[in-house]
Image 1 (cartoon, rainbow, N blue to C red):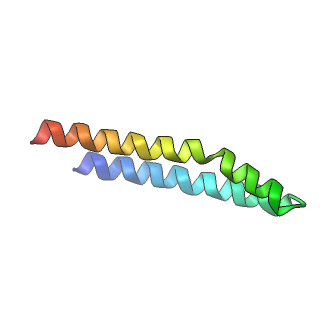
Image 2 (image 1 turned 30 degrees about the horizontal axis):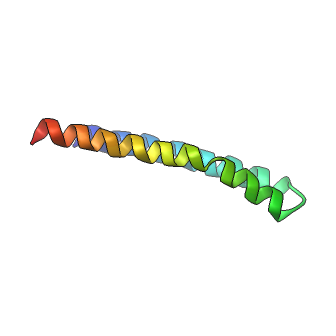
Amino acid sequence: MIIIVQILHILNRYLVELIKVDYDFCTTLSSFRECNMVQHSKLHLLSKSANDVQNLCKMHYARTY
């Protein structure tokens, strides 16, 4: 369980940095549409991270129980 918490903490830090970069970049863009497209281009990274956590949790649960 401690390993899962550590992984979630690392992913949380990564996602915060990813969102921060998008926000900083979007404030310099001239239109909302461009900003929105940039944010959606990162969605595959967010879903990949969520899937990684889910898979790690499943593996941990399978080994534990």
